[in-house]
Image (cartoon, rainbow, N blue to C red; front, side, top):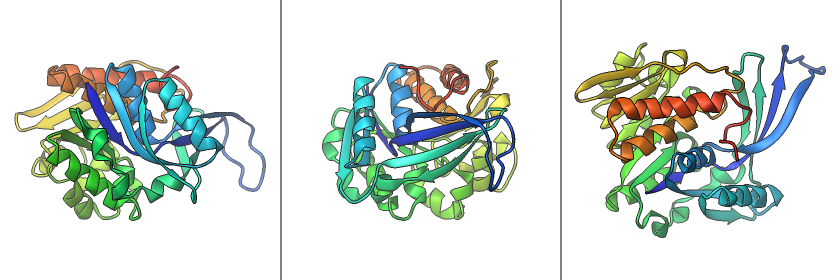
Length: 290
């Protein structure tokens, strides 16, 4: 089953620090260089969930870009990349505290220059579904490419999903909801849901059913919920030690979408998402083990 992902690919510099970061001073940390980018993360977890992912994005013509492509292709992800000679490959500094919670300093690099021309119709041929990372829509420079991807997917008869990705960047919720109107599955976390609806609680997801066919909300330690025309279905979280929360939402999306596209029940699809999300937080880095 072929699934197209449109989103960022890059490198993460993950720094795990046990104490507060000392402004203007030194803070000891354990640092690793890993693959990253919400699009790449989701594609790799989709591959781990048994699908055949194609990742549409943009990388720099540099050492980082070549490393990113090589790693993805070695893991079984087809890369439909535009190569940018004028911008570097995306790099994100990820600060992970002792509780496993992450803060990010992103430079989207070439990803920010994704354009409608990069949405190759050939990449959609034979696909069942297109998943779009919200980072593409939330950056004015790449937003036209995100809109083009959704339009191309609908014209090709694919189902679609969007993850808003960042509550902090949802400065114009009405505009974002207008951009994603008609998607089959909208995938916010609880904080993003509050940014979109102005209300607390998963029940507010039903307010978005005039925008999306279903709204699936991740709620951290409380698990996940699916809001659809037939009501709300919830599942609990799975026990897991949170080592690094980076990419947990991307992993959840992959598990849920792979199960849903196979025709599994709403509850089983949620459980599949929670399972991969729990696996993601239990290890360093945003991507599945090689």
